[in-house]
Amino acid sequence: MVRFVSYMSPGFPESLFELLADRMGAELHFERDTSGPPADVDPFRDGTFDFGWICSTSFVDLALRDRDPSVRLAGVAWVPDDPDVDGRPVYFGDLVVTADSDVHSLDDLAGRSIGCNDIVSLSGHYALRIAIEELGHDSDSFADLVFTGGHHNSLDALLAGDVDACVVDSVVRIGRARHDAAVDRLRVVDRLGPWPVQPLVARHDLDPALVETVRRRLLAANDDPELVGALGDAALTRLVPVDHTHYTPVRDALRRSGLQFM
Image 1 (cartoon, one colour):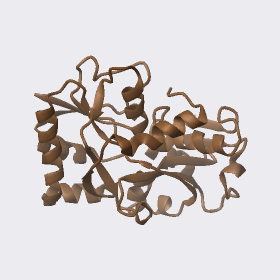
Image 2 (image 1 turned 135 degrees about the vertical axis):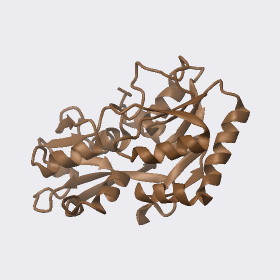
Image 3 (image 1 turned 90 degrees about the vertical axis):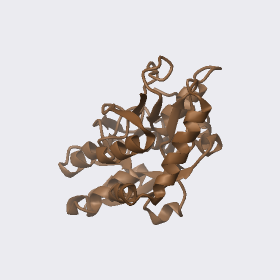
């Protein structure tokens, strides 16, 4: 049985990945504590998983970690339901504050607390660090980065007054704002990005014919009303093909900023 892991929940509904796994003909596993394999872990190298939906930063790390990458793109990603993406498979790290906050820019958050997803996350961590570095600040000392363990946790911490701001996956924020009036009232100070969305990756030594079969099944599922409905519930519109060049901006931004994958 093909083994498929999602690192995208609870930010994204588990039901979406259950449908994706069904269309892939795969056994589904969830890793809920991090957005992707951290720097010292590689469940694709050791054969634990065959496919994975992981954060873009994790893909870049696994693809560049050595001369023999443990993963390659399966060639499928999603398009957010967000007019700012213009139909592209990209998203943002939304920097969010309460409506009555005196914060109006990232600079205003110097010395304050910012809720972040986890250390692997692009939209909920690295996007913020990269933006801080590009402003000429030291991302290690600019603000107190509070890791909440999830985008929803970061939003909850902001609503509870536990942090001064948070940086979250724009898709997760938009999806929650549709049914949570408190989140809908939050103010977006900045949209960091756009960045390439999280990709589906395949273990490097999988049969190319199997990877192509999975890719075709998922792209064909855009005509499946059940999956289209699940994508819509997650503030997504459709699945589209992508190649490795789509993720070059993540690699280049990390190198340009001098940040190391954690």
